[in-house]
Each structure stands twice: as structure tokens, then as C-alpha cells.
Amino acid sequence: MTKEIEVTGGSRVYIGGAEELLQQLLPKKRVIVISDSNIDRTHHDLIAPYEHILIGQGEQAKSLATLESIYRQLIDMGADRSTFILGIGGGIVTDVAGFVASTYMRGVEFGFVTTTLLGAVDASVGGKNGVNIGGFKNMIGVFSQPRFVVCDAALLATLPPREFRAGLAEVIKTAILGDAELFAILENASFDTLRNNKALLDDVINRCVRVKSSVVAEDEREGGRRRILNLGHTIAHAIEKSSNKLNHGEAVAVGLYHITHSALAQGLIWEGDANRIFALIEQYGFDTTLPIERKQLLDAIKGDKKRTGDSLHIIVPMAIGRVADRLYSFERLSEIL
Ligand code: GLY
Image 1: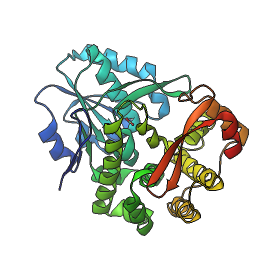
Image 2: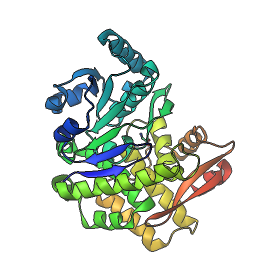
Image 3: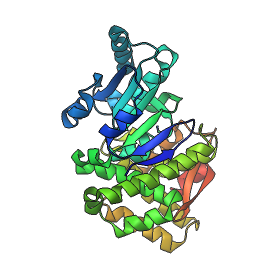
Image 4: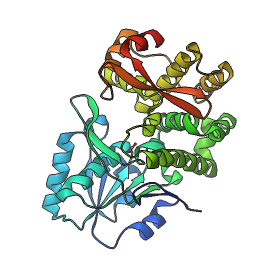
């Protein structure tokens, strides 16, 4: 059964079968799909009915060069203001498609079908769309809500295990920051049960979307509360900037582990809760070794685009289902990390 969640600005997330949902949700006008060559191979039937533009894969596709190429193709295709852009793919495709749609001819309507777990629980929900520049992630972007996001757990069956696990890092993050029941569900499940039990996965996605959309509804433009979604991400972004060994989710898992250690050392979280977090990260098969030197980590953190002068907001776990937003000076950060 389809689940429907209201996000903000009239945007809605639907959890259910993508093909049927698209029949209902797509407006009766020209639709141009933006996707990537891998999705065209794994989910060709979803893309084939529409005119489409395919981009490359990986973080390097989230670039100004990709945007220019898409704008030029849209112009060649005669796309106009009444065209609807449908992004079908993971976080990279939806970020690029959302940015293109928000800027082409000053903005056209758009929607997403997410084909990765990371996209379903995080990347496609929230309205931030952007691209990278010169190694700085998401430096150029907009806040702009899609008309709809479709999450279909059946599409996730073709995901390689490593990518599925990457999505689970954001699921664990969401449980820690706002859903203690989800945390317990994850403790009682396993990597394999989540991969194979569609009803369970639908429930997990539904819970993650609800937590994220309620946070985004309170603070769409990240002036305050929305920052809690960055739990584990300051360390993760520093790792991603300094090394390409880990994908985003793997880096988030390392970030969650180390920020929990730091919270424990500062006496902010009870040992029992911290141990449950460590155990869950391990249960889902993440390697929590920091893949870079501590100095490299601190230097990269100092370059974080979200810094406020010589300080940075860091989200710390206080209990299962509760976090705090604390402002740390760089000096203090080098003590606690
Ligand atoms: N598009 C991801 C977010 O808004 O958080």
C-alpha cells in the first residue's frame, strides 16, 4: 500500500510502486527524464517511455560542466517553461536534476524517483539541490522543493551491497537523532533482513522520511534546527575531502562512531546508549577506522563551509533519539576529537 508523507512547500513523498505512482503523479505535459547510464541499464523500463538525458556516474558528475551539458540538451530539445523534469536515480542525479529544473528558464516543475537507499532516506528529501566545485561539495545550489519524490523499495533490489550499506548509515543517523523506535527496529534486524524484507524496508524508509521532513518543515533553509541532520557529517565531509577510500555513507558511519566517542568522553551521553550506537554501527558491517591522519581531519574540518568564524556547530548524540547542537571553537574541537 502506498504511503504518502507531506514535506514542506506542497512537496510530497510517496512510498510505493514507481510505475503506478508515476501514472498518477506526472502532470499531463511534456516530461524529460534526467538519469544516468547505470540506471538506464538497471531500470531501463522506467526511463524508456520518456525523452531522457543521461549523465555520468560518481561525484565528478555533480559539476558545472554537467549542468551546462544538460542546459544545452534541453535547449536543443526545445524544452520550455511547461516542461516537467523528472530525476530518476540516486542522490547525484536528483541533486543535478533538481538544480537544473530550478534554474532552467528560471525554474520548471520537477519530481524525483529515487533508486538508492541513500536517496530514499536522505538525498532526495529536503529541497537542497546543488553541485560541487573545485573539491567543495554542494557549494553551488538552491533550496527548491520537488513536486513529489517517489521511493520504491523494489527498485533498491539491484543495488550493490556496498551502496545499500551506505544508505543504512543515514538510516542509523536518523534513528540516533530522532527515532528511538527505529533504532530498536534496526537492532532487531540485520543487513540481510532489511535487504530482503520489503515491508520492513518500507517501514524504515517511511520513518526516516518522516523524521527528515518534520525537521525540514521547521527550518527549510538550515538556520537552526535543520543542522541536526548533520550528525556525523562534519567528520564525514572532512574524510571525503581528504581521501576517496570511503563513499559518503561509509564516511558518515565513521563520523557517527567518532562523534559518539567524543560525546562519551565529554560525559554528554550515557555509556549504555553510546555502547548501543557502537554496537549498531558494527552490526551493519561498517569499518569505523579513521582513514586519514588526525591532523588532516582537523585541517579539513577548519575548511568546512559551515564554519562560523573560528567555531563550528557540531551535532552531538545525547541519548538514543536525541541530539544537541553545540558550538565548538576549533581549539576545543582539536581537544575533543
Ligand atoms: N536534498 C537533500 C536535502 O535537502 O537535504
